[in-house]
Image (cartoon, rainbow over all chains, first blue to last red; front, side, top):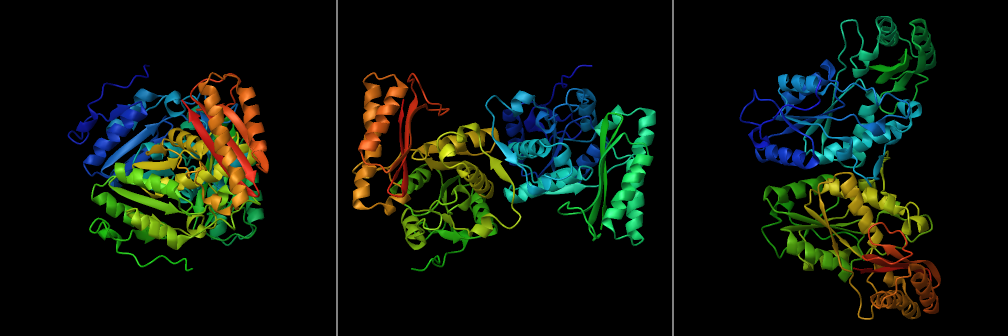
Length: 301
Length: 301
């Protein structure tokens, strides 16, 4: 399978032919030019940053962007700085041809598919020190992760003069990191968080679900099942955060996860673990099933 | 002396009356509204970030901005995060009324004078980890300095949709930090560096020159004298960086500085000390005279 994008129409024709393939650009200079061409038509711009290997979760972000904005820009970049050493950077799926086909069908206007060198040229050493909320949970499991996320997201925001950027609630802590960063650094963009999209069996869609064997998928279902049980318990009056977290832990281990990283009941804004449950709370889990790392969450308002 | 700005005209009249006082705003919301009003007229915008206590150096930046851009925005903010503990944050001069008068006379369109709380509201924890070039020289003398500078400059760039920002060469390392940050984070703004402005006796203008007694001022002149002698030596063929740095050190000590922080011959781009002098090089000095910290430099092309 070739990784080369199909030939694309000139970017200043983006609005002329809604059925056309999206323009695909690979350099920051081309990207800026294409975005400026869109801006000159006074169109509002929605941005959907992705690492590719697109699924219905990503496409729901595109759909929402097309509802709210005149033009939609999608970025596909497997960002090396948000992977810790030993993580799956090398084997992370990169089905570019299929991704571009899906984005064409979804009516995306512009796709940015940069190389690593285009995003991090030699001598590029400035980074974002992410907000406090980055230090817990994923920040403990994967220390450099959110510095990598915050830096690349800020770079993309600076390259693409978008009105709104769309992120999925699946990466709940990431949505808080991005929102805090945007507020703290006064980045002129609105962040909209979109609901988690799940398969019929309840598994939250993730590009990493490809890695799961049939037996592993069975075990993976315990993440969502555990979250739903815990939500139900809160609805029925459970207010002891530690007890609930303990029962979530037990449920995941019984469900067959290989290694539990965390199962917490936390304040929805700060991610501090709650001893006494107050709403809005968020239930968050991270676990390995086989060698695949999965996360899921439910927000309880 | 009152610190309250004079009453200002509505910001959407900025263009109507060139002889008017500049609009003065104190909140980010007012600032964004005023900048958007300027943008709606298709005017280009120049930005001059300052800590106030304005002198002819700052005014030369304003003048250059007015040459290049249709509208000029000046910010006055004594940024606490770029002062190390024990530095002169508390006693740093804040002659706001005089500053606003100077900016009115200079034909500035908009002045932003925020409170510390407006720039750093509670819970604001995201910062910029500045580029590698921040680690040397000032970064060694004042470790948190450039993280504070980079963060506040990025915030101002994000608040003010300017085409060009103007900085003085007096803070040479700062100009490199800002330029690298802008490149590394893809910030959509052009940086222009303007020449050092000096008093007739050669002293580089600085808001901190106010602190100097007459005797201290005599000693302070040794900074520029030392730099000019060193430049002359290079022009005459000196190519031993260590020998030249040693003679600069001796010249400053003989000139009566109280404490020498650094005197270096460095690569103009990386600030690495040069053993063998290659052009473009930069000669940089930092010293205390009495309790006042002064810096100066000469770029040798």
